[in-house]
Image (cartoon, rainbow, N blue to C red; front, side, top):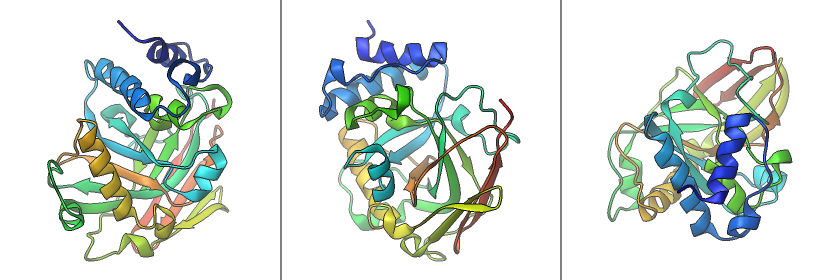
Length: 256
C-alpha cells in the first residue's frame, strides 16, 4: 500500500499539478522518514525504468539560501532523465523547473562496505560538465529538507556535455563556473562552493547512499551538486555553462 506522502507526490506527477508539502505527513526534519518515502517511489519506478545514477542536492550555500535548507541530500537518476541528446528539451512534462551547472562524475568502481577518500577518488573514471534541470512537485518550492528528500531531491532532468576529463587532468575544486542564458551571465560559482570540493560531495553521497542501502555502482553517473545559484527555466531559453578546464555544456528548451 502506498503511503499518503508518496501518493501525494505521485499524484502531482500524474496530474501535472504541484501539491502541498508532505511535511505535515512525515515531519519537516524526519530525514529517515523522507528517504523511506523517496525509496517507496523509486521501487515503483524501477518496475518500468532503469536506474543510472544518483544526484546530490543542496551542496551550494547559494542554493541552500535560495531554498531555506541547511544540509545536502540525494536522489536517484533514471535513464529517461538524461536528455543530453534532445534538442530542444521539452518543458511540457516539467512543473516548476530551474537549472544549475555542476560537475558530473562517471564511476568505474563500486563504493560499498568500508572505503576511504582515496577509494572514492579511485572510483572516478572521468568527469563531465553538466546541467541539472531540477523540479519540485511541491507547489511554490515551499520545501523543508524532508519535502525535497521525499520528492527525490527535487530531481527533474540532466544534460551531460561531451567533454570528458580525468582527475589527473582537472582538479574539480579549482573549477570556475559561469552559466549564461541567451548569452547573459546568470550564475557564477566554483568547485569550492560544492561542499568545499565536488570530491567531498561525492564522498558524502557514497557514504549516505551506502547507509541507506543503495550504494554507488560502477557505470553510474553522479551529479555532484550546483556550483552556483539556480535560475528558473522558461520556454524557448538557451542555457550554456562553461566549467574551466572541464568544458562547456549547453541545452535549448522548447516552447510551451
